[in-house]
Length: 597
Image (cartoon, rainbow, N blue to C red; front, top):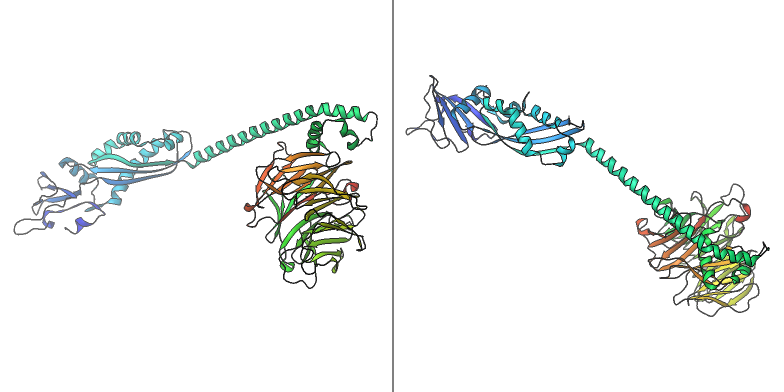
């Protein structure tokens, strides 16, 4: 008998008085967790508290009940609330048997139909038809889901359950002591709230976008209004001459007016070379980035390891290919050769290796294409050319010997097919057949980059100089701009007869230098130091000094605000090189020559 009282699953039990153990001096007292009721055959009752010996006669009936509150769990699934949202409910009630003779007798009569009443049977009786579950469902139905989910319902729920269950509890000798826990949730309400939140956020984004577009429109209108007086001066200077170029018209303006006009020129000039993608090489990959959202990768191409890791990337319009050839080519300078990819889908079209290469530290830093001729520069291997349809036909224009020259950079073509590249602080010019035509000495620091326009060649140097001279008949190098830091890149854009040279400017962002009219304008103001820069008619791209992010200004976006793109989110490697891929030209005449990027 005493062993049965140690069973934690038993709530109450009844037995004949003869089953209670007896000794010479009497029976054992009731354990602390129990209370009892002794009923005699003639109907008399006697309550037995914990710690006392029940002393039942053999013909008596002994009822033993736990004297603590019993936890009764309640659960509801998808119960409709007053707002018709489904509600999930998890509630725990504390129900205690009363310490009275009449209450224990009522419990025996209504619940103890078997010799034992276990906890699960007790919970089922409390939750049964018309019991606590039905009362909880009625409580949920009487209130909106938002009130149930967002407030503490325990006091109100306790009063509701006591009112609904009071008669049954009284008849069973029980008391609803309190609501231990009550948790309500509503997936339907949560989904509705998320929808409302997303709708408000979308409306806020639309409102913010409209505000930005309106601000951009207002800024553009002010810019045009501010330029109206300048344009009136230009019209007066042009008179009836419709063929007057920029160089003839700009002297009519003051220096400040010239700067304002040229700084805004690329935003209001019709585009010929329009960006299709920003190309970047990092690690062993080439990435196509969206010019409007540079953190969105349009395409990611794994480069083959046969020629070593990539060092540079350039874009070229394929003007000599057949109709089945791609309109644009991606030229990747690798460690020991050149890769050519289709700019539309990233397909590898050809590999151009250099034979007999030794162990190298660097790679080809610039690749250019003109017609059927490829040219590439490498500070360890020199300058090499290939015929486009013969990857196995490398021809060396210059091979370093004994570490001289130290740097070979910036391979490019003139309009008539002459090949130009930088050798330390000089520029070599080779005829289309490969013969050395002339050498242009600078002697003002190593040359980092070159750009050619007609008979003019422009050079950016390690001494921070931007220089210009004629490559066909060199005279004296003209200093167009001077900086304290090296100028590592140079991009050329043309507005009719006006040449714009786009250069990186460290903490000053990206500058446009107009050497013909002696003006320097800031194209992009950036929060980080800019090391290299690229440009086409509708896009300016800057690479940060530590090569960890791009700063992109797209003239086609309404806000015209530079966007930062931390490239470490896209690749675990720093950016080696960048260029701009152009869209297919609508007018075949616009596709002639090299890309400005």
